Image 1 (tube, rainbow, N blue to C red):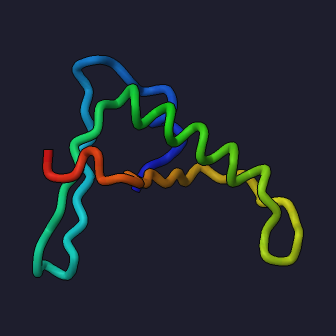
Image 2: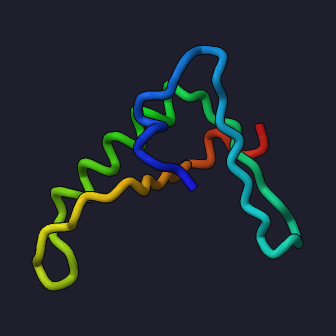
Length: 77
């Protein structure tokens, strides 16, 4: 699970390895440079905060962050 610390923890030598076990049938992993992940997580969280919830209410800020490798650019690398 990612949190808001990953938005500020980046350097050329830091990589994140994100693993999806897929119920152990065919695990997948993504090796993501920390600079890329930090920027992507920051932008997606700000977008989520500015998007209304299901009932039109504002989202409450929280420390949880989500990373999506939309085009599988980092899949099994």
